[in-house]
Length: 125
Image 1 (cartoon, helix red, strand yellow):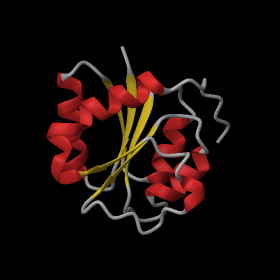
Image 2 (cartoon, helix red, strand yellow):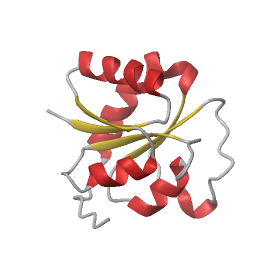
Image 3 (tube, helix red, strand yellow):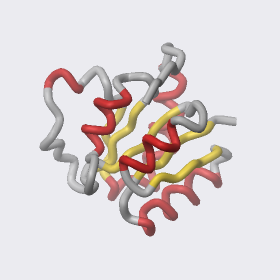
């Protein structure tokens, strides 16, 4: 079974995405923000990380940079815009999804990112 870490500061969004992914047979761990996600990453490997872009404390791009390409990373955005994403970040993100299309695109994007991933995780946070 594939295990994903789902990160969002909005509990309602977390619950919606968790239900969707669990119905498709994925094991889902939740983190309500970037700091909590860093703690979760110490507890074991994940097959993919799904993270909201705009969050307090650590935003999705900052978290992606800290993880530094050790896992397939999918960013979630409200409107498709990526105000914090720089040119060097393009190699760190596998997919960008608009939250309005989550029900349609999330599961397929996760599976595609996992299947294309070749690098074993060796994160030391």
